[in-house]
Image: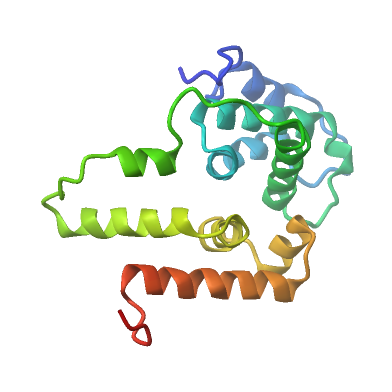
Length: 196
């Protein structure tokens, strides 16, 4: 059983969060059933890991996001994207409670630090080398570009959904994504226009 960072609430099926999601009665006008929230946990966890770069804290953020979504499900606007709504709750909670309050100290190295501390022995598989290069390139992107790349490229959000969630114009989302893609091409050596 996978426990959240504080060890209090399991995320897997049968845990208190999952049971609460299934047992809480629905209002007849709610178009999305609460069990559907469980399907979004992997996307929430990926985004939480991106934001805080700490597995335990990411699990705590996902738990808090789900609890807030359940408590305020009446605020969900019918006809909108549930995943985008959940990601916005998670992002807002992170920035309101972690960033503004100084965050938590990390007892271990961040993923970026781990990459620099990792042994420089080349793996025998070429795809592993390419994957490691891509990981380093993505981690080197500015936060705003990496966030847009994650939301659109990994989570499959539309430009409009990402713009609404981030509180920026659609054009800003497009330019951040374009700059992120161009930077990745340059860093991985796949850019035909790059010299180096």
